[in-house]
Image 1 (tube, rainbow, N blue to C red):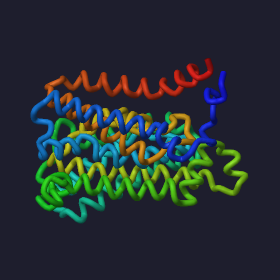
Image 2: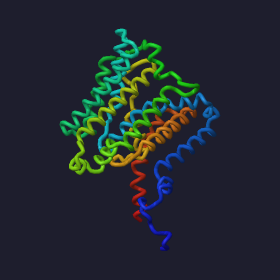
Image 3: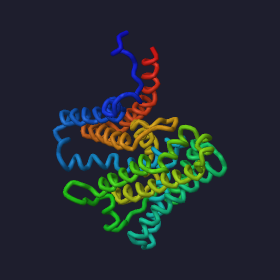
Length: 328
């Protein structure tokens, strides 16, 4: 083996070379390839309004994915996010029936999200219960409450000013949801990568015991992360309900899988301790382009579910396969 063939640890490579060989760069190349493939597969894909509509396939899920990314990096997970959306939407729908206006609806949506996040956080951080078990339970609990309240009925009659959150455009084809998605992405990028809180999240995910002995209030940080996940679920509930114009118990069904897939596809380790917001942003675009492209080709929804499931398995297995290959 020549000196040029020797293995060079990533920490000894130049910053440019590290970025070039990073997961985010690979994911960006995949996003570009999917975009090009979609442009050839459907003559309607490159229409500006169609591309704008494509953003609705991921913006609401991505808002939750940003908070979920921090939670998974810390070593926890929340599988109740879609059910929080259902409960928050039901609460807003019930409020509409008694005449509450748009400001009140927004506060109710955010408030229900925070309460649900706090409930999950207390069970995990105060009682020491496993987050995956807790949130599987609250996933059924929150959606069950929504089903009991609504039954086979639906809440409608949302005011036009409220509908703007899900249907309004800031400029030309740029929707309010997309602008909100960009702002939230920037906030979470700064929070995770530029603050002491973000460094604490990484430390907890790598070694919670070591982080605790380093003076980090581990349980407090995790509780805040559950609060943020609940809050972002409330924001998504406002946008989704405003876009649909109605509330049913089945709203956002199956979003848990897609949100977790988005986070893991973005390079966040399912075991915690690593990941970036940039990766989650690119993964959101990848999943949005895939689902929108398949929709333009009239691919059935069940096939899209198969694709999402295959993506989740693939991105979890790929690092392991890569390690095994390099070990050889």
